[in-house]
Figure 1: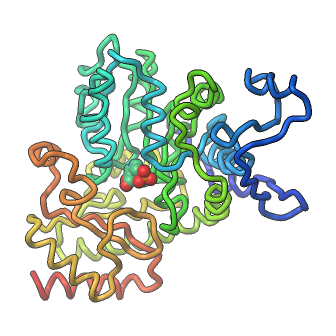
Figure 2 (figure 1 turned 90 degrees about the vertical axis):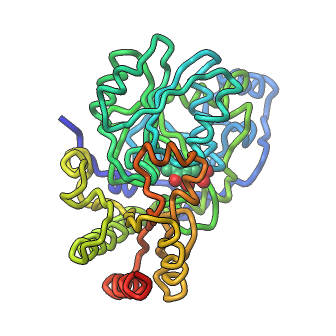
Figure 3 (figure 1 turned 135 degrees about the vertical axis):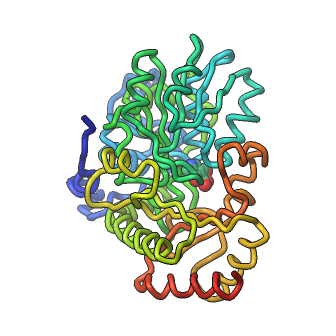
Length: 399
Ligand code: PLP
């Protein structure tokens, strides 16, 4: 049985007040904090002082408010906020793995994640096996005695496959492996921890913040793990220092309050486009359509009320066909020819040439990534039929 939850109400129920009764928590933009006694400072450095802050690379009140809201959304005991999504991913993996350990990962992940796993971890002698995350048997076969982590994205970038988190959790629990899930594409829609994942990571740069005005990330996990990453002697977050600026934390917290409504609208618009693309006979990928291979699975694991997400891809076969169409779509006002996602304007790019360009071409081929795949992050367009008509006009005029 999979559990369904209501992350929007979990956030709505929080009662966070400012210092003077403000409806938003006060912003604490101090790097350091005073102590009344030397004894208290010493105890703080040993992790023994309750409720006090010592230095903002470790913890900051504004970061704590945002982290608490994210933990409430995910149903985890705790959370920590980072300066980027990559910081959340790399901090988590470097905390979990030592030299000589082994990671199994979905071959389709964000290009930066792929590059970290494929190129960067070599310097620590951490081995990585890339699998098709929808092939459960291949994952079982890949497990070794030194496997520490199974890594995936709830909805993979850019192939938009859905990971069977409950099934993956069964496998990892048997072998004491940590299941780490990047939920960047599907906040609110999927609750990976409640489905069995140990750690949930985010690029908050995308849907969670939704304003494209900063990069930020988050790690949602047990209190034990968050304490471990922020330990002054051995914590990866404390020692590598990828902390989020508290001014940003406070602005992201305010945007989190509207996330559920934005996700509903992104999803409604993307589903509308998917239906219109199907009528046109266009080749597309959208996990909210019955034609998608994991449609049934997605319905089983998703929370109700937020739709199937704002990500959709069309396949134009070649990069040469995709390029002029993307340029024309920008000129005619479909949105912006830009990477990233979760913005109120529609964003689109050729995945193989942009956000997955770190993945060598032969591996792109192996994972089924078409060189003509245009990934759309569908915006909050008020008139989505008009957006569809403009996309169609570009395809017809240059088709
Ligand atoms: N995870 C996913 C699924 C992404 O798409 C991205 C960025 O595009 C990241 C992580 C990295 O996040 P950031 O750019 O905030 O470091």
